[in-house]
Image (cartoon, rainbow, N blue to C red):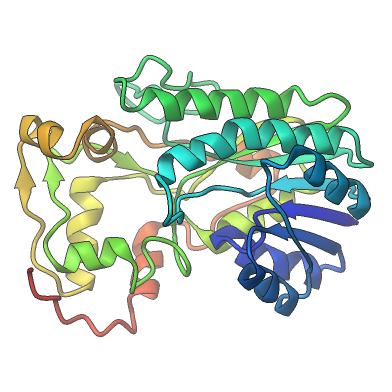
Length: 317
């Protein structure tokens, strides 16, 4: 098949593009930089440098690719010259509108969008599933993200003439993510700067980036239009996984922070993540996409990820 992927040089793209190429697909991958183009070329894709906010230029790129499937893997969390969250919200609203418009005018028959599983309204017990409402009435700091995700997902599943598939990925870990041994989260843990907020009751549903890419491969040909949670089998509270990872990194035991103080110092968004979010069920994706995570648990995944780390705690500064 002919595949057009927007965001091919990101954490998922670096896993997904080689899989697509190895499977025999012709992959046209859009990136924002020449550095990204060099990386995509090395992975066997046909790189194009473009901007999802250039509606006319994007439409030309997609049309010229003659895609059977368009994949939306764009975020801006790595942005260094602007607010990453604000830029990602713009990508998920304006960017999604532009990319869907381009796909609708092209030869594509299916549109696959990257979303997130951890912006659903928290449930009192159990796990969220694909029918759980998004957290649209969240505290004000969280609402822009929830509303952006809602718009992106609604536009995807209601594409004109396209089968819209939304993949709600869990918290990524693995190479190229914030959990990469040399990246922000392990470094913060080793410096003792990632606390357990309140009871640490925020429940994380993790997914390894390789597993997320495999699920995306499955979604090329499996699944009815709709929404699918792509997460592992073992949701875990912050109070469970953070000490476990700190031990793997030979880091100090995580400190505890009162919720009220955390709300003042860290803000509502991080309090939600650390102490309020619910985990997500993957049952629908496992059945409909014929997909299963490997490893099934973050415990085995993190052990493997940090097995070769020189785990000397970084000095506090």
